[in-house]
Image 1 (cartoon, one colour):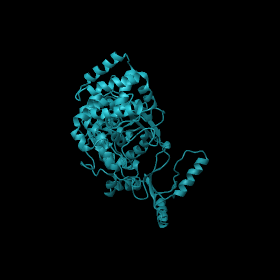
Image 2 (tube, helix red, strand yellow; image 1 turned 90 degrees about the vertical axis):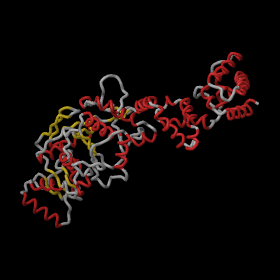
Image 3 (spheres, one colour; image 1 turned 90 degrees about the horizontal axis):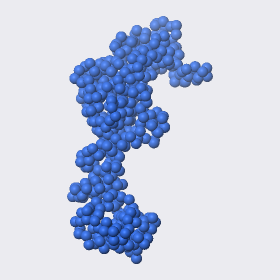
Image 4 (tube, helix red, strand yellow; image 1 turned 135 degrees about the vertical axis):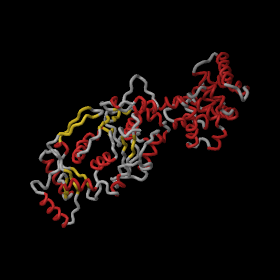
Length: 498
C-alpha cells in the first residue's frame, strides 16, 4: 500500500445506497486497488436534519455486499480520524481553520436574516440578474466590521460565516475525465457560507479540510460536483494547500428517456438494496455499474471485480453520459446466474420458501428434487432469483385455471382421441419412468393417431399441468407425483370430457 494514492468515498447517511453513489464508491475502490493505494470511507453526516436511521449502516452493508473493502473508516479507523464529520466537528477540527480565515479577513460573519436574503433574490430576479450574494460590509475596515458584529450580536442575531470570493480569479484544473476546465470566480454566485449559524461547517468547506488532513490525493466523483470544485479550490488557495487531482464522472441517464437519472424516476429501481432484495447478484451489479461511464478494451462485457481491478484505467472513463439500461442489467445478471448455478441454487430455493410455496423443513427434505425442478423450470432464462417463484408456482406447487382456449384443445376431435390414448398409456407407465420413456410414449401416440404438433402436445400438457406452455414435458413429468397427475387427469375428464 502506498500513500501516493489515497482516495475516498464520502457518503451522507441521508438515504440508502443509490446506483450513482455505488458507482462513485466502485471507481474509487478500483482506482485504489489498481494502484495499490488506500481507500477511505468517510461519513459526511453534518446535515443532521436529513440523516435517516440506519443510513450509514445501509451504505456500508451494501458496499460490503458488492464485494468492496476499505482501509480506513469509522469502524476501522486509521491515523487520520475520526471518520465521521459530526465527530470531527465535535473535536473542534474545523473551527481553527474558520477562525484563521476570519482573522485574515478572508471570511466574515454575516447576520442577514432569511427574509433579507429572500428579498435580495427577488430583486435580482426582477432585474434579470443571476442570483448572487451581496456583500454587506463593502468599504468597511476590519474595525468597522467588528463594530457591526457587536451591534448584531446585541440584537440576538446568530451569524453564518461566509468566505470572500475572489471574483477576478479563474479557477482551472485538468480533470481526469473531462479534460481542462476553467470557471471564473464571478460564476460562483458570490460569497458562500462555510459555517452555518448552528456552528456546523458546510459541505464545500468541511470536505476540503477533511481531504487535506486525510491526505486525499485524487477525488473521483459525479459530474454534478463540477460546480462545487471552484468553491473548494478557493479554500485550498486560502490555506496554501496542494489541490488533489479531480475527476468528474459522466452523468447517468435513463436510456429510455435520455434524461438524467433522478431519484424521483419511479420507472427504474435505483437503490442497491432493491436489486439485492429481488435476487440480483453482487457480481452482476458490479459488472453493470463498472460499465456505466467506463469502457474496457475489446468487445467483452462480462467481468469480475478482480478483472475490473486489474484492467482499470482512469483514462478510459467516458466524457459521454452513461446510459442506465435496465434490460442490459437483466442480461448481465442472467449471465452471472448461468455462470454459477450451483452457488446460486440455495438462493433460488430460499425464494420458494419466502414465497410460501414450500416450508423450510420440506425444502431440506426435498432438496434434490427442488434442484432438478428448478433446472427443468428454466433457471437459465431468469433475470433475477425472485423470478423462479413464478416459474415454479405452476405446476410444481399448484394448478392454474383451465381457460376457454384450453377447453377447445381438449374437446376437439383430436383432443379427445389424444386424451384417451394418453390416459391409457400414462396409467401403464411405471412411477419411476424417465424422460425417454415419456417421450417414446408420446411419439407412439403421435404415430398411432397420426396427430402431431399442438393438437398432440397441448391436450396432454393441459390434462397433466393445466398449462399450454411450460418446461420440456417429458422432463417435467418425471418430477410430478404420479398419483397427483392421475387425479388431475381424472378431474379434467369428469369436467370437460364426460
